[in-house]
Amino acid sequence: MENIWFDSWGSILKIIFMTPLAYITMVVLLRISGKRTLSKMNAFDFIVTIALGSTLSSVALNESIPLVNGITAILLFIGLQFLLTWLSVRVKVIKTIITAKPTLIFYKGNFLQEAMQHERITVEEIYSAARQKGFSTLDNIDLIVFETTGDFAIVEKLIEGKKSSFEDVNVDP
Image 1 (tube, one colour):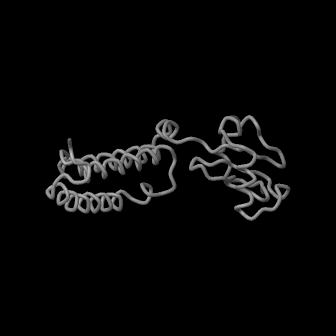
Image 2 (cartoon, helix red, strand yellow):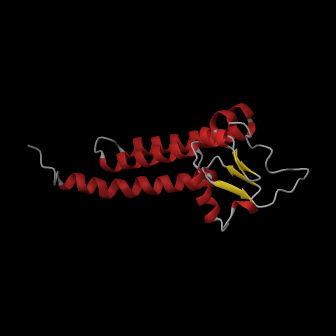
Image 3 (cartoon, helix red, strand yellow):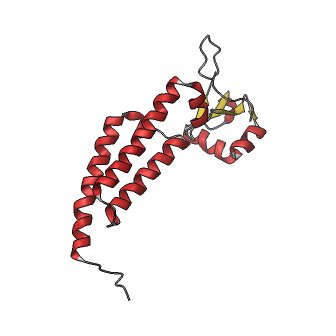
């Protein structure tokens, strides 16, 4: 029967050596790749972050994975994320594929039920978002947008202008 409490001093030393090296490498690569890699996440960014964490833990704990292989995997994940975000800024089709559109879920006193159902948002979540932004009533809110990051953007008074910040908002579910 295998000992679940202790394997060997060699495995402990490998973890002590590999974890900081893999961690430092990942931090350096994240800093080089820019702020976008660490910004508020859309679904694509979230997946990359989970993959990076999984890779780091695999390198730290799996004795059969050499450090260079782990660093290569981390470099590939960050590189692919950088490439796709770079392309999404330049190629509209790529942006459409990897980034959701913000969705209007409340407009001038009305909950947009179809949009809320599509986004799986409850009325209680909207009330909570309003309270967190300091609103005691929805009467003073013109619109609420469910952003691609999962945040709620709350606009107290809608002012029409030449360049509306709501041009990219999905008004249909």
